[in-house]
Image (tube, rainbow over all chains, first blue to last red):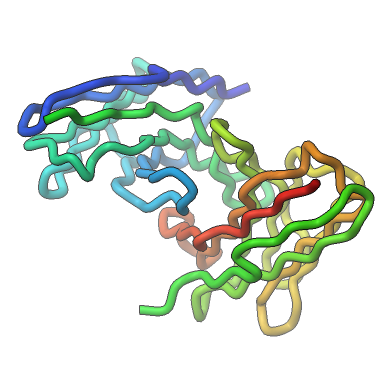
Length: 111
Length: 113
């Protein structure tokens, strides 16, 4: 299987930095996605890691370590609008590409 | 830029009725995925299609069926609806050659009463 674990909830302060972790056990995967999802809305793409290391995109960075079965999403200069759920998802290739989602982390940004 | 279009956005049905959801992928995307997301849960993969053929199947109930048409749009048919089918149904699309460009539609809210 590919158990994907994330903290259920996190709270952080506006302007601060927060790191959301994702650990997984899987036999293999093509890459790891991070999505942001506001309640009742579609997941929106944040980042995609294929190789180990850090991918930076503005205020968001994502890190992957395949050997450790670990990824994190780093959000800098938090804004109130960053309050949302953050989903870690593994991209698997069987007969087609398929995204397997973690349970998501609800982030609350406070003033 | 064109995105994944889903319709209807909201649907209310009674138990044992039938519902059909439609998905229009991003132009030149030949792969379509369907996900179900219950309240407070993560999206669960239902089924996917590539070039009008079913390519993968997840936790889709036997009461549900889906297909992809010649114009690449897809429809998810749900019969004998149950209260537990109430969820947000997402469609996503990607070009088969590039699994790292999977984009989601806005979702269709199904409420079964």
